[in-house]
Length: 593
Image (cartoon, rainbow, N blue to C red; front, top):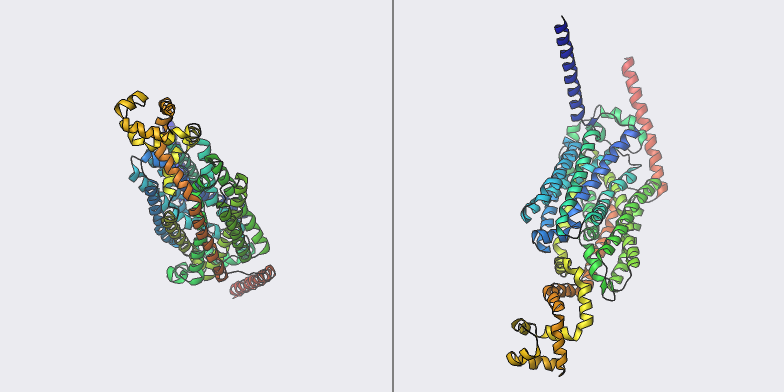
């Protein structure tokens, strides 16, 4: 009997365990929330989305933070590296356009799966890449995953946020690019060692961070059911009406012919315009260190890499604060368009200052912190409010196709970034030599000290560099007996002073140092000399991109006047009250009959 009792207990325990496992599996697999969540749950979901966005952008920008180490390790040129980035951007275009399927299949598994794939690639694949082509394929795969998640995450933010509160939420979501660059820069500046072998650690750190967020997303990230998310929510007071209407919503009909519904001027043109505006962002995230370290100097001493990273830190930090600040202000005032116009005009003012200072190489570090931060302060004003307005414009077309509208923007964004990376090196022709020779920049102070102390001797040596290669000794006796023609030329250059020639032999270590690094340093010097004018030309291009953006703000949805916006809000509340009354009266009459 005791044996039978133990068998029954074991069977019962096994059944309970299997039932618990099935319930957990069902809970894990079912990502949909069938009613609008309360504030605490909603903020949890939004927090996971924002963290996922920041981590993904951080992982995406890690190569830019260690580009010189990658070039050295894989023995590639900067142009080859740029070709990898361009290919990855085009992969992002395709992925972003594919992202529109999240209107039908849902958003969360795309985000969760993407986080897992990118985390594995960053942690295990890229650090062990055996050659440049393996690295190229891995980076392109990361960009593809990031491209599709770029569509899914803002769609999730839109789903969980009423229009009155949308700009604040989008302000946090748009932290992703700025905070991603900032995180990559800060982590690299604190962990990257002097040797090129340390670059693998940067990918591993970002990969582990991504896998942690993958686990958090797997446990906590949810999404609204299609019946709920495929409606427009203006305020949180719309919840009851939306949930009642969800019972009769035909999702398949609402999502039919997505491209035909969304490929409209008020969606496509603003998407193109903001992608062009963001050329300044692509430039800053990809090339800005080369700009700071080759354009500005005092007494021939250029900004150091820590100084360049310091300016970047201020610049991206200000951007993060600006995105949130103006998102909140936009929601308080109920308008988006004035912020976009004022932000664009503010960008133009500070870009003129940046162009002006680019022509004055002696501009101080603190001056450039203020000017650079000013540009991106106003960019933050534009971008967070634009994202809110764009999702509202898409909703007006069809809220069931939010991801399709966002995929149009995501594809345009990636395509414009790729084109800017193709065009920029033709304007910034010096940047290839700057980046390729940047590992030798640390030798510049020593080379300048040698030049200052031994200038006349070095002039003679450089003038007759080929002759010295043939002559193994530099003593006067051997020059007279074995290389008389060279001796006479040297004596002429030394103004007839033979003792000057004898001193050349004493500086052989310095000459050997220059012989080893001089070509690299001269290429760097030549590129730095050409850099200011070229950067001015490119900054004028980015200035024109901002001007291009301004007129297309008028195509987007939203009021200019806070007073009219509040009037719209009151009218909407009256509409909701009427609809609720009608539905409840209809329900009551049906119950009575």
